[in-house]
Image (cartoon, rainbow, N blue to C red):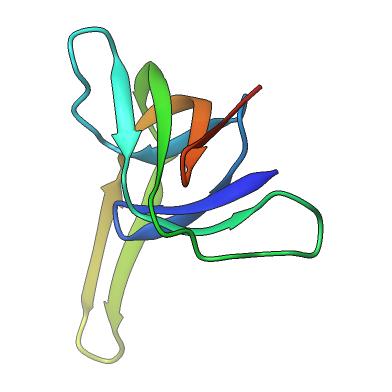
Length: 107
């Protein structure tokens, strides 16, 4: 069983017990995170439904920064070169529970 959630402009396929790296989030005092935008849910393999009311609950495992990505700008015949690096911040979240239409699914 899994759910498809949207956070940070991206979509993630999550199941209870998974650890996912998402865009930086602010968590509560106890590290709890709630994803309210659930796009799809599947209880059995091969059947995907759009739930009426659903949310995914998780806890923050840690924060970090991704690998460095090099951005290189180059204009030929103009002697123009520019190199810039970027590291994206992320938050690791462990999915603890999926609540769909009054039913709760845990790991």
